[in-house]
Length: 330
Ligand SMILES: C[S@@+](CC[C@H](N)C(=O)[O-])C[C@H]1O[C@@H](n2cnc3c(N)ncnc32)[C@H](O)[C@@H]1O
Image (cartoon, rainbow, N blue to C red; front, side):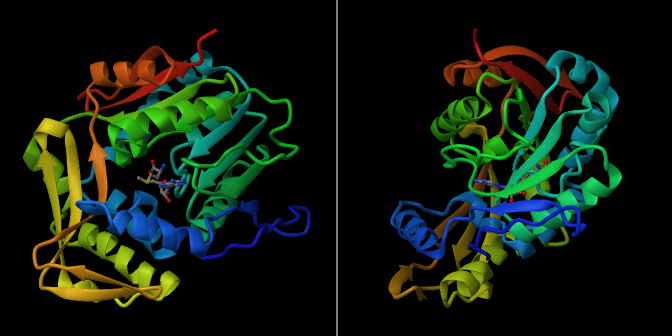
């Protein structure tokens, strides 16, 4: 984890400029205290994404069981000109960009004034934007490492000055927030985008068998991804979790229209984190993330609840997921 602000000069350094606003360790400790005092225990989903977490997520995206990434990329490639015409011009601001493998068709179709990628995982973000810069040398780029759900304003930067802002939030990452938080995050993005539109990718409900396989694959990468949360707490906050004393579970909860992912304590155990002691009972869950699924109707209602005007959606041939275009009301 890096916590210092850092800027690089693109004329002498091939890496893309990165502004690092990662929450400091003291804030992370406080979030861990709040999360472990909840019932059931739950940490913010962004804790899953240190450099190793981002690497493991990329492997998940390639799993046969996890079709979301392939489907969303194919949809963007097929519909980019139409989406570009509907969205208009400006700076593309991607929330939770990850490896930035989805924005390419939009860059090609929109020719934006700039591309600004936000993500919590600093080194992964630096590599992603640097690679994208090489394939799109004509688009000025900037990375901002931050928790986008609490960032009060985008930093002052020449690439953002006086530009119309176009938000892009793919990967169904909004589904990681419980519904009341999803409304808060969508309202918050509306402020950050200052009247600009938002292209929002949301996955839709599917069969229990399909969803549980997608989030608990046969080769165990999803389990490694979840357990990496404990490794990262050990590394960054001096905790002493034994990740092998937690079993991984992903359950579709139909009544809530979500997949719940959790690490289940396999024995009674005491864990130390930054001077605090936490008792985990045998079978007690620690929720690592949710993935809420939104039918098109629920997506419209969610957007409207957050003060957005829902304009239209694009979907794949099987209608598994949608890209929703939201605009700020006049
Ligand atoms: C589910 S992955 C999706 C990645 C990519 N957008 C895609 O569609 O494949 C979520 C991404 O958002 C980032 N992320 C999660 N929570 C975040 C937060 N609160 N603030 C900033 N980035 C976050 C993670 O590091 C990760 O790269």
